[in-house]
Length: 71
Image (cartoon, rainbow, N blue to C red; front, side, top):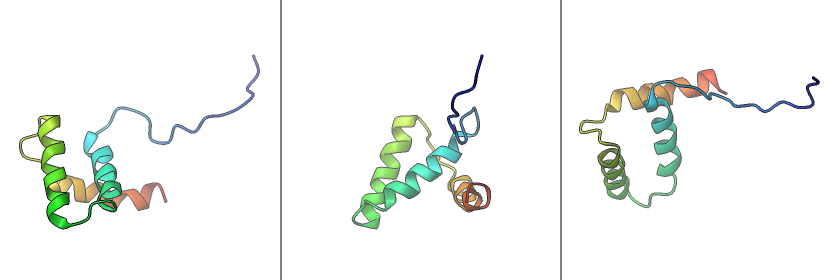
């Protein structure tokens, strides 16, 4: 058995899905034309996910945490 390469899986694993959602929303907001459009997309996303009351503080936490842990 010989190692011939390595694949960086980054943060692959089971964790709080808000970590992924926060980064996805932050990235997508760059493409939304207006704040009201962003808010509608936010509502649709969490409705589809079945999350009735999205935890905005948790989303903000993960956005603040990301640069400290990933660079």
